[in-house]
Length: 128
Image (cartoon, rainbow, N blue to C red; front, side, top):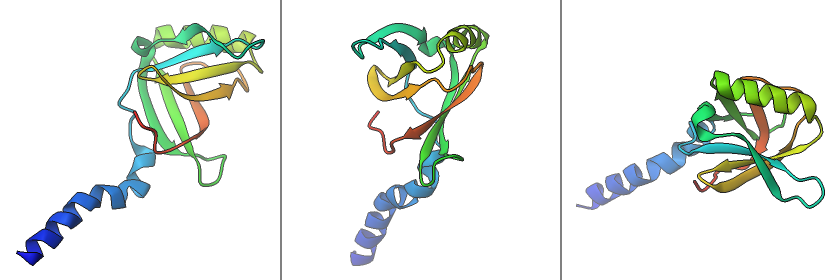
């Protein structure tokens, strides 16, 4: 019986123990939205990307920031068109990234992006 309890505890803890290696490679199971941020007051403005325009959003290890997580986002053609138009005219502006209606992070547009982009410095774990 003692052996079974130890084995059960190990199986319960196993996902937690492997999370450090696996979590940065997981897809976000949420509806991802991206909004403009008003530069004057920091309030959330117009939606730039809606959940139906997101093909995938995956947590990956950052290639830029050491010991950090990035969010790799792939958009469909409608999202690519919207993203390209907005980012090309708003370099230096802020965006707010939401997961299931909760703010995940705010980022600054560094360059024009299209159907694929990375958001660096995402905190993990994120409570979805």
